[in-house]
Length: 124
Image (tube, rainbow, N blue to C red; front, side, top):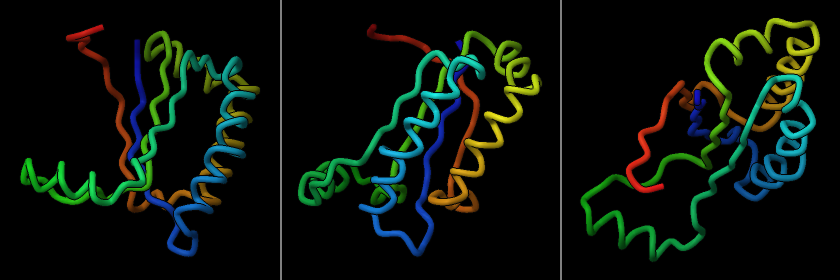
């Protein structure tokens, strides 16, 4: 399986709640609607727990830096060739354009990270 992992930052003019509402109620369903044409097998949004005390405790206990993102997303495809082929069809290109246009409404890509990955299941 191929996975695309994203750690995303919201656009500066959006509150965390506005960002999360758009991501959950608009972008999530948009990904679902285009999933078949793009060959997306799974899509997960990961949202930081809204518990500052718990976040501070785990970070200070391990000596890590504070979380500096508004959420994470993971998308799965069968493999890289299937992912690329789906994007190169006319329907796939339109679907990808729709998703990227929507991302621009709430995600600050210049401060976000994304990469392709494969998983190593240690406990499954």
